[in-house]
Length: 226
Image (cartoon, rainbow, N blue to C red; front, side):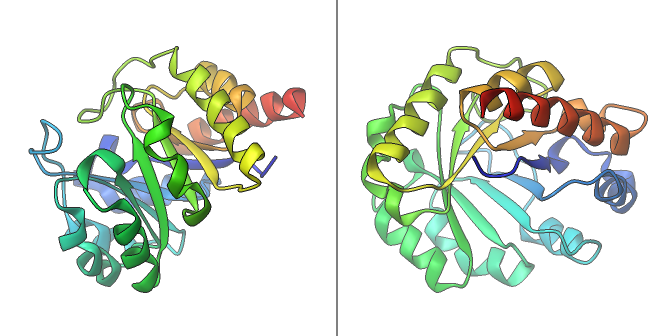
């Protein structure tokens, strides 16, 4: 199994102190910084766009794992590339021509990921698996931070892991939504190796310690699952 990656989501950060918040999770050993982009159309909330991604790029060299919860993502690929995104994750539900969009992201020089909402079946992305670097299983309905983990998504993670193994393709398996020290253990045991954590990290007085604790719990689970 690939090494565990911890990707704190700045959606839950204090934007008055964004640089310090990013620096804190970097100090805590975060692997990636997760940027949740919302447009108020594909999801019922508006978060931020390329300008914030560019601001984060200036304060860290960590990969920017940029999750587009937006309609018409194909129109914004170059904008986020220019802002410094290393990976674009797009929703299968948000585009008609997913293969074309994945190729567009790669041609722009970024890694490509695909995300699916809780009610979307794995069959929606089965044919794109060999072409993506990452699959994101949403463990909440997208749109807001701080939601409760949907436990029956663990079975979807297990089925995705088996499907990837059967097809001999091995993208990162990322989970996003309600991830804390408890749910991280369950997600890793199910087959996830990338954990997006927002409020469980940035709501703490010491985000660096929260990242370290999350990693410790996840790596113990990975050792058990191996």
